[in-house]
Structure formats: C-alpha cells, structure tokens
Length: 483
Image (spheres, rainbow, N blue to C red):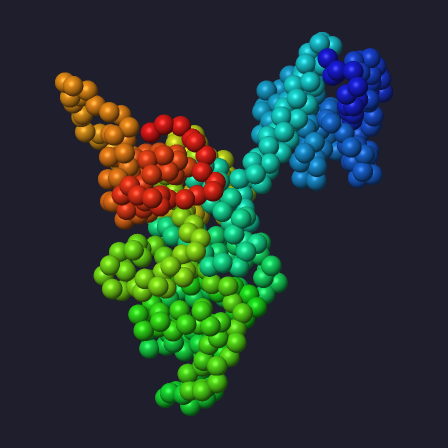
C-alpha cells in the first residue's frame, strides 16, 4: 500500500501527547512501509518542520496541551502549505471535523479507528497531494511549451507564428505584422527583438496613428534647434534613438504619403537627416512594422506607397483573432488570473466551468486585450473566491454565441463534376477575394495555411489566382491533406 519497490519511502510526522498512542501509530505505519517521525505536541512538531525536515504528511491528534491540533493545522497551512494534514479526534465531533476541513485539513479520523481505515486515509491524502503537484507541474510545462516570451498560444496558427518568430529573429530583414487590434502585434515585435542579435540594443516603439501629422517628421528624424517655431533645443528622432537596435512602427498605414517616401529612403540609404540640418547621419536600425488594416487596399486607394509596402513586407507575420483560436482561451485566462491576483493583492480565485465555457464561446471583437480587461474586471468586482456567471461583464454574459456559418447548397450536375476543376475554381475565387493574401484565402475555405499553400502549388496558381509559369513558391510546403 505504500508504493512500489524502489519508490522513496514516504515520511510521516505523527503528533500525539499520549506515549502509547504514538508508539502504536509508529508501529502500524512503520510496518506499512512508511518512515515515521514522532512528536509529543504541536510545538515539537513545528520544531521538526523548522529544522528543514521534509515530510509527505502530518497526522496529529486534536486535543493536546500547549498547542492543539487545529492550531497546529493553522500554523502548517501558513508556513508549510504544501504539507497535507490529517486530524485525529477522539470525540466524534462533527463540528470539529468540519472546522478542520474548512481550515485546510486533507482529511480527519475519529478515534477509535481501524488499521485499514488509517492507512486508507493516509494514502488518499498523499495521493491527492501528489496529483496536485503533478497538475501544477503539468500546467507549468504547458505554459512554457505554448509560450514564447509573453505570447501564449497552443493553436496551430499560433505555433506557426512562434516558428516564424524563431526563424526571422536571427536575420535582419524587415517584418510586417498584421492582425486585428488587440491580437498582440507589439508582443511579436518585442519577441523578434529579444531573440535577435540586437537584443542588447534599444527597442523603440512608435504608434504612427498617435502622433500628430505636424510632428511626425520630427518624431522620426529629429530636428535641430530653431528648425521651426517652438524648436528651442535639438531633438534626436526615433531613428537615432533606435540606432543599433530595433524600431517598431505600429499602425504604419496612418503615415503621411510624403513621409513614407522619406522613410523608404532612410531604409534604403541607412541614413537620416534632422529637420533644419544639411548633414545626413548614418543609422543602423532594424524596422518592424504593424498594421490592423489591409495595406493592399490602402495601396489601391493611393494612401500607401507600393514600393514601401514591399520593402516592409519581406516577412509577413499574421496574428489570428482570438475567435479563431478558442483553444487558447484557457491558457490566456490562467495567465491573466495569475497576473490580476498579483496586481490587486488578492488570492487567485477558482472559476466555474460554465464561466470558462462562456469565455470560449464569446467572439471577443477586442481579442486578447479585451479578454484581459474582462478578467481584471471580474477580479475587482467578484465578492467570492470563485468566479461565477453573474461575475461576467454584461457585454460578455449577454452576447449571443457565434453562429455557425451557413453553407449554400450545391446540386450535383446530372453529368457529374470534376473535383480537381471544382477545387481549382474555389482556390481561384478565394485568392481573388483575398487580393492575394494566402492566409485570408485559406480562412475563407476553412483550411489550414499549409494545406492552402500545397493546393496553390498543386494547381500552379499565382497570388492572383491565375495559372502560369510562376506559381506561389514556398520551400517549406508539405502535403497536408485534401480540401
């Protein structure tokens, strides 16, 4: 009952003020394969624990001089929360047993008890503690396996993002990060920087949509004293601040077209010129850019330079919206609960299964940022130590569940149809509607990015959906199933 051969003998600390009772318990437990250490009262037991002795379980009598069993239990829960405690009482008091369980006892025994009952309770308490440790360890492994710096994701689409980050970080090429607001584009940029050879250099972030147009050029390239009204002293722009490191340009689509031309020149020449200066200055900066709008559409509307787009879009990284990776919600909730508990100085609450189910069914238009705000709000307003459905924000609690997308009926012609031709036709339509964006086209057809790449190559299509001698190329394409 004490474990298989070769397993470490488990150590028990037995506390009882009666000599005969201690000796009897030590004999029974010793013959059952445990290593037993005894103490005559609570103070002696705490001294054993303070000496650094490690035990798998503490079993204590309830009524003892100096410190009773409930007091010893409280001390153990405070100073040794990992140690399970079993309380023995000779009085059969239900209220005492209930109080012990409320204070964190693993179980209790009512004297007199049988040998088998004693061993069963001890084994159960130790096994439960071991399972808790294994679950905690597993959670740690899962968090590390599905975590890259501060980005969390177990979904295949996020694993592809992790793989891309690892592959591009060691290069110096520009990266264009796309995705809806709140998906974590800046986290991707920081991860690329932290894993690059520039990690020791500065990481300078600039939200192009947040800088007034009249100040944007000065923010980028800096200015000399007197360059314009109000320029009372020289100012180093973001390029100079990022010299030797990385500059992250968020919402790049909000940049003025005339400034886009100057940015393109700075990227090509690797030099900038402050406003009010005639002397160019060499800079060594890696550019990472992000946008939540379709830059291809901005190019068509003459709001974004096509040459700058291709200069920035050397390696595209797309951050999927949270509604397309619902399997990541529990991992994110786990991280946000832990962070919120630390932030607000509260014990981390548990969560009712119905709440997690509702969180996974919510469409999250604000993506990961909205989920984080939701968890923080629940932590602040919840009254108990368990989050229930009534603790959800009204917008989440009352939001309708996402509807299944309706699929139009298809009538098979009397003379049949060519499946390869039908597949090619669907691929071409998706590519045209997505304006050549393979990720968007794959989502339209409900297939993975890898599968779509393979099918594009199979049918010899280019990004516009046309068949030709130069189809889409990708060295990493693998055959990944059918449409």
